[in-house]
Length: 481
Image 1 (tube, rainbow, N blue to C red):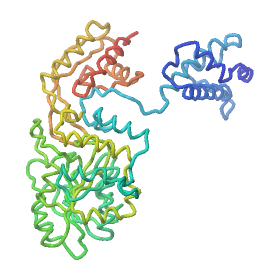
Image 2 (tube, rainbow, N blue to C red):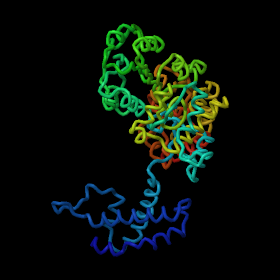
Image 3 (cartoon, rainbow, N blue to C red):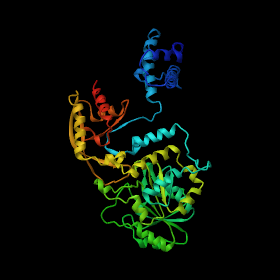
Image 4 (tube, rainbow, N blue to C red):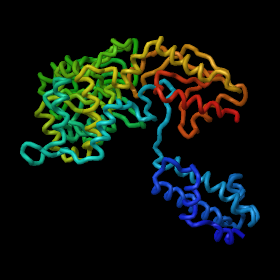
């Protein structure tokens, strides 16, 4: 019977013609609609053909009710039932077209690793979009007409902002550390404090990155205390560098000691060994001005005399994913000549996003950088925003709404001990569970990511964009319907 139903499946052009009579696919290009229709019809054919498993038993257990509707209905009922399923499947395919989509971050975690970390400022994003659709002088010297360097577009601005002699940008900070190791420490020793052998996102660890770069790790000190003499005693003829890793994603507090960069620099000069600092989520700004714990800035670290400093572009800098290396020109020049540099280099869009972000630092327009804008929100600001959302949600059936005190966090491994006071909109379902409500928000056409705190789903306005409020309100109007 199902083979006969295959003959009832409409051709692609007929489905598109039917869709054209409705508003089901408004906003999509014809090529995208055609792709979705083909995918939906392919799925239908597979379902109709795949009615027996290897043992000859019908595959009822694995079918959803929606699919069973057209698998098992009578032939005269097939076309109308199938049409309903087909249109829903086409919409599902369209929603999944280019599976990376907008989500609303209502968690209060500013640098949310799973959501892409730092948001670009609209002006920076516009510069990226401009560069994406035109040819550019990425590697062209317009004065001479000869080939130029893509790094020339970023070096001057980084030199101005950090005081560095030279710079290089690769695709993330792990790549920066890898390149440094592979350039200066292949089969040689790199001395690192045991308390700084951190694990970063995705279970990647500093010791493994060093090993991948060809370096031999020499651990010194204890987990909680490392002294200058520990480094002194470890230096030998095979020592290539002293490496300091800023533990930006965790803190050892209490009975602890670490050696400051300037002291390592003195030792490095005496031993003629370069000092390299991995700052992780390095910042250009002193966080204490925003009520955050004091952290070493990129500029201060370089002023301490470090030979090279590496840090991320998509954390506290507020730009795109990138690994930025600044420092002495002779060392940067050697990095540029490493064959790995081509494999790790960034494209024109990352450079455009980075330049677009650094312009705000040049102009002193820090408030236009989303990460610092969100960090600067006061409790009064957040109270007003939480109250605004609660008023939009007031009276929705099946929900209790209230504004309450809470805490946000920076995220992305930055300021791990920082507490950001906030106000949240707490939403309690009168029926079903709080887990059901969180899932309902997360699985909408525009996923809304919120936190569960005790018996409520909480929406933190710290990380909401102006257009997010209405989307949240519209979604919650569908709760229980």
